[in-house]
Structure formats: structure tokens, C-alpha cells
Length: 181
Image 1: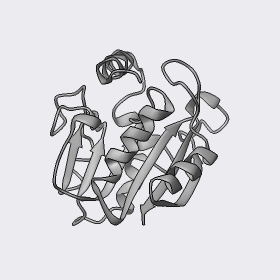
Image 2: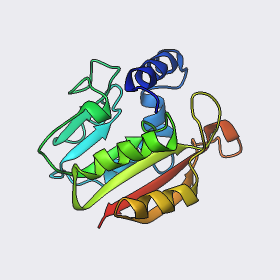
Image 3: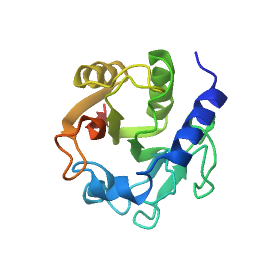
């Protein structure tokens, strides 16, 4: 298992230099990003895992953003180090649970599962590459098996491309919605 500090530092280095961070991703993906605002009620409690610059904060009054990197997060903390007695209706996981081995990812999913209400939703945007630092690609089959393993129903899964980039593999992601049983 990769130590959380190594995962966080790897992400920090990538995030600091990525030419398409922040607002870009929020407005350009067909199924994720700001499109999700139409699926989240104003009274729902939301946890944004890896919130980055906390761009959803101004749109969702009951949102808590966690991120190990940015000071705009409500709590500057890694997912596995975040503890709360609060249960959430929605968890946003838009590219933040990718690092490490499958066991690391399962540990993150188990932790999120402990913080979500029955009937609550996790919205995912997942990479599909094996390029560094990712160890394996997220696939539709992986979403099917992990959602079932952790007590969720996979209710939606689609390819998610940046607007105007449908033919460019480097912008391809998987969007998924899991509902807690």
C-alpha cells in the first residue's frame, strides 16, 4: 500500500502544473462538473472529496470540501484522514480517488461508504489511463464490481468527454452515479 503522504505529494506536483485545472473541468465535461448541479438539491448535505479550489461551494450551501492540497478547501485533509459523525446525501468524487493500488482505492471507497446515508449518491469522474501516476484504468466493469462490493447500486455510467474533444483519448473519462443501498 502506498503511504497517503506519497499519494498526496504526487497529486500536488501534478495539480500545480496541469494546464487544464480549476474552472476548465467544471464547465467542459458533458456529464460531470457543473452539470451535476441539476442533480443535487439545495438542502442536501454534500461532501466534495478532492474539492480543489472548492468551486461547488458557492452553488451548494450545505457542501463541505476536503482536499489535501488547496487552502480553499473547508478542511485541508486527505480523504482517509477526514473523520466526521455527519452523514452526507451526496459525495462528489471527480477525479480524486485514482492513486495507488486497487486496495488503496477500496479503502477510500469503504471510508466514503461509512459517511453516506442510505439512498445517498456518489458522483464519479474517473480516469481511464494507466499512465503515471495511475496504476490501472477505471472501467465500466470495475464500477460495476466495486459498487456492488460496497453496497451501492450503479444507476448510471457513461463515457464523459470534454466538450468538443470527443475524439481525443487523453480527455476521456468515465462518469458514474452510485446509490447507497
